[in-house]
Length: 278
Image (cartoon, rainbow, N blue to C red):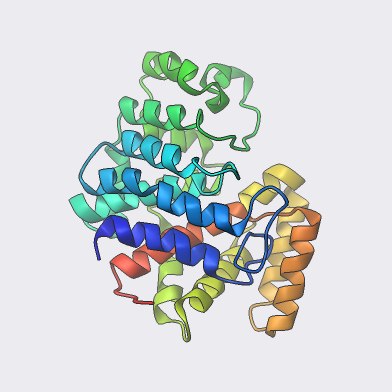
């Protein structure tokens, strides 16, 4: 199976895993974002993933992937996951799928890549914090209108991720050698049972390990920490307890989306590098 297909399969397997507390999965939908939207988004992202595998620039490939993903009625299904998958695919086909080589891939991004990233925000609504006053001209919600400011400052896509990393778990993967992604891939590789069940274990392990930054942005640090603490207590709990927690978070509107994004990236690594076969 080709690298881009592994990335697409990773998106499909991630959303199929259940229960993943607070997230859409094959047993749970949100009012406005459903399981079928994630399946459709994974198919739509294919052209961008193929472009990354073919050596096209990371920013352009990401923009293409998000544009394709957005062609479903649910809105933003996999923006963060694609922001991780595109450079991983590029690394796998150009440098090598290791933390060191993936770090080299993201550090080699350019100002043009940053422009592609900003253009991608014009395809879907993405929840982001207000930018600091000194960076208002770099507000990602401005989309392509912010590109002149990027060029004036000479910011690469890696530079943009560095600015966001303290508050955003996906950006932090870019600046920390995809540390959590590669660690979670080992859980997917070494676990027992069907691959979607191993993915669920990886998700819970990630959530227990660090508070989810999307939850922190939307509900505050205390809620994010409490969700992480509860996930830690469920690592060895039975399925009924996990299902109950998953239902509770959905009802509360608490969505650990960053954890799901990293889980999708980890699944790709397990498929592409470690030979995990569903």
